[in-house]
Image (cartoon, rainbow, N blue to C red; front, side, top):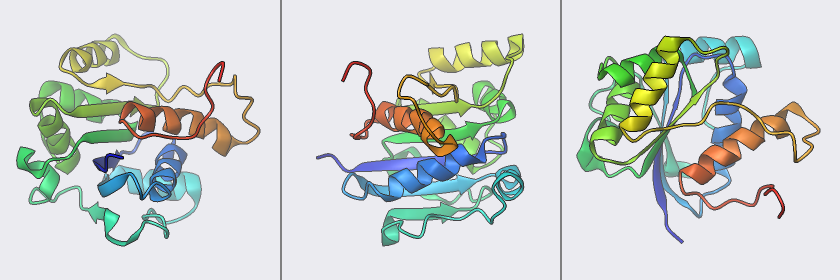
Length: 192
């Protein structure tokens, strides 16, 4: 089984629970994860505190050195260079501001720089916007990013698995995102 090198970025869009459950799910997939670099934007930290009532942090069961936290301003972090060899980057949730900066090629922090690296290296960049409705600017940025090779996977949960809790509903998105990144998961499959 392939061991993945992932970058997880969490920005300040509402929906901190998506980022939290994504990190928790990854913490339990140590057999598939070689390394996981995690970046919180400053606004992500504030939204996380407000929505979840706790300090943003890595899951306790992160498997030692597989998850590493990097500061948003750290341009010396490995993911700032294409030579670091990450397989995929997931930005979840992704603000429209972050998406716009990536679409414009503006690398103002480690998140946007790492996304730029993923695009130039032709690696998987998965953006999970949590916004509604979309403006024409949002749609054009999503189109531009898709044409550049990114995958836009909106935080639109599915209901056909009959999720009984908010966490189960959120996991319909996070499991989908991890599958897009190439992670093998036991999760609900339509008709399965």
